[in-house]
Image (cartoon, rainbow, N blue to C red; front, side, top):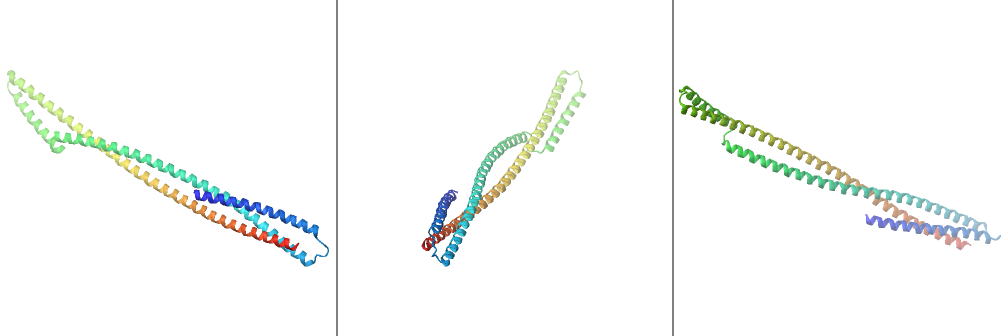
Length: 272
């Protein structure tokens, strides 16, 4: 971009110099034309007048062509300036998108890290509950508790069938009833806690999967937008290069025509 800027400044400076040079040549042409009219004598031949007319007409054509070229160069300068502004805007937008992607990546990494920690905690809880309830499955544990409950129930029934006057038997029966009730309550609490932990773990797993999908979609969308911006930026730079080259060609053409004008002026001065 700096190279293009320097080239543009150089071309603009040359255009200004060529414009001044053409103005000077036009003034000299007018002076020569007036001088020719003041010094014209009756003895000049028709052939000399014809030569002057041809040279003057050719000179005017060259001046007109130069004016058109200068106008074209001015239009190209405006177009190049517009392309430069567009490129700068695209570069700023690319920087903003890169910054936004970095922030999103950081946020996603933070969320993923937190979810992984939560998942580890839940897995530990599940393992602890599993170990506390033996390595059997939930159905096996339930069957075991039912068997134990049935066993204690039978013992209670047996105790109830004994004479109630015996205080020791009554106390023993109440003791076993309390033990049975406590065991049933512990079983119910353990099962409820296990289901709750499993449900919570499943919800966290679902959230983690959704965040991973969203993160992947965001990255894909950003990559596509970034590629489009890079392509557009390269296209504008290519057009700017072409404009700069065209402008240099036009300046060379103006330089050649100025040389031709100077040559014609010299020929006019020799005809006087």
